[in-house]
Image (cartoon, rainbow, N blue to C red; front, side):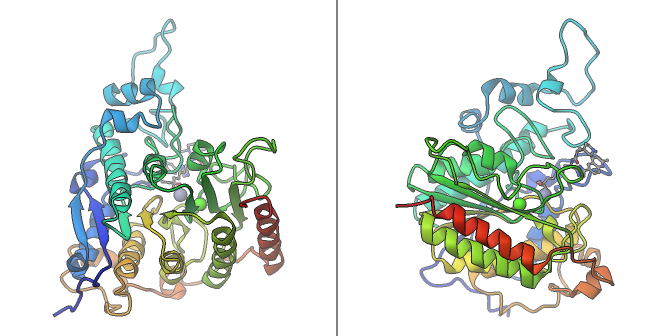
Length: 393
Ligand code: VJV
Ligand code: CA
Ligand code: ZN
């Protein structure tokens, strides 16, 4: 008896398609779509599926993808060949134009299907919120925040987040986008750069010469022209290696409280990239599942329609822990689930540590050096507060 039941009058929907995991970026590529299966296994092993509406996400249609993306780019994605094209000086390989086929955004079998499934899940989630049928809609297969209108970037080909926010904007005057992936949410920021109907807030490691994508400085807050409505509607929180739960939670709550007060969004889109966790293959923070998920808990408490996306996350067992725990928060059962990973979880041996909420010592042994001073964090909050003076009536 798990006792995980549906909260009365509160609806959470979970949008997932098991087909996504069948796609492979390449043996040693950091992006592993099977982390979604691991997440889903853990969610099911805890019995969380009894407390939400589970939907098999459909693939987004061509028309849906071109609501943001250029049709020539989507046409190319749909016909792209996984083999290198013969060199032709007269007709340069269009893959290059779209940043496809390199090591970050390889061409692989079923690429278009993978992209449309990720987009479809996020669109389904957004539509459930719009129809008032969900209070929180979850799409762990989405969150691909680097994709541009006509270009792939950083493991992202289709920007499912932009597609979902465009849906939310049909119903809501203002949408708040928050991004806790360790990388800067540049694609989403750029897509809504010129509107005051979307405010984007990204927390990320910032080291322009050494860490991807190199954008997202504190001073980058949208178009510099005062006559552009998007001015002051991009918030960036640049961080250094080793940030802890305590610091991150303080920063997140200080900033989001002020943002919500001034911007008054009708809905929140939260990208939960799990590469900001300690022990990630690409990220360099010291966050535990507790600190990461406190952002989800805080957003839930704001009581606005909320969509949760996945994103980065390159140590699959930790990704699954975080997204399973955050699913528990969504359904309000985080205090009811045992911290020991259930015996009947498929691939339970993959978790190595049998706790859902391991300590920093269990993950890293020795935590990595924290290069964030309280002085710097206070300056960030001050800068954001000043930006927000230009926002709202
Ligand atoms: O730093 C970069 C770009 C390079 C060129 C390509 N080489 C491989 C790496 C340096 C400048 N790209 C980043 C992209 C990070 C994308 C993050 C996506 C998200 O989490 O924000 C949202 C889903 C990068 N960092 C690490 C790698 N690429 C990387 C790529 C590989 C790899 C190892 C590391 C690709 C293939 C293989 N190994 C086999
Ligand atoms: Ca981010
Ligand atoms: Zn990332």
